[in-house]
Image 1 (cartoon, one colour):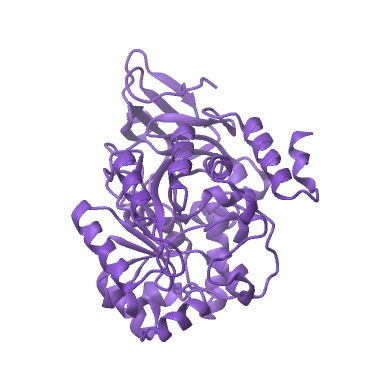
Image 2 (tube, rainbow, N blue to C red):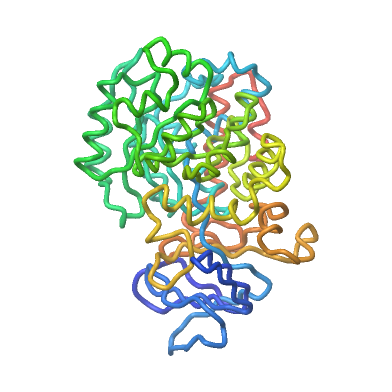
Length: 449
């Protein structure tokens, strides 16, 4: 295979040819064999291989035996906390509390989160996730990790003023550094933590900031019984109603989870065009519950899919998340026909891109869009036969099937190896951090052996 190089921008066009191309365009066209031409940061051609016109200097990537699809979009995650994978298993929901505290987190220092973000970010890239919405404190340390590995990210510094000091200046400094321009691969949103941890005054202030800057708002909402109880103590019958009261619903808002919502609140989400980031694996693990995503979609609410974080998912794999979403929602709805495969594919591509305000830039393979592209191997025994392409992707494919990844026209993964960071260094650094966090000793050193 002729490799395509690691850089976007000027220079030779990269031509991915010979594979099957799943476009996720409005007509959901599939080309086999197809060709995808990357010129600079954008897609110059997507279509049948026979109709592609070569130019002198084109650099070909042999994609025979590969499925070429849009980069996957993760609508809600906290990549830096991947280093706490496996530390909070089989807890009752009451044990998570308001802060979702994790064992050993109190021993972490801000610099640790850089390596946690490297770990989580590289894992997601290797699994075909090319764009994420990520929010946490210490985002000034985390965002450079995303920039280094080449992933597309909307980043937010968490804002919270109930029971802790508001870090408004840190959030504003992050916006000053990375901006809110959607054309930038790493840019800022605004990240209020949740209705119960933000005062009404802060939520109104955030609405004003979003209106002034055009930044998108990312908030946890109705994620726990404790949260809903706290909102009732403030006079609101539900978290969605609380956000409506302060003007913080709308098409520029992504509300993660929305587990505990009633019919009226589903109607509010639908009427306002508010996006819901559905995190089925995480919700099942923390709350033992499935968000009413089937009913939300039936009522016209807008839903994208997300992994949430490694402590409550353990694997940052949107291909796996689609299967989880499909099965859990069928069970929750008591309807095997619920949550069809075409809908699930849209929830990690075109719909998730729209949720992040990037629908005109990414989410499908169309000429003129940014070149966020994944090539997935099709020869695995678990994938045979490819009788139904969408169903095989949703219920059989795994992140481990991903072979190559491009973001903004730059190849960032080749043959499952990250190109812009040393995976072995990341494993070593995370192992070193973990041995400090847990001095009793653990299996963290296995990665170094």
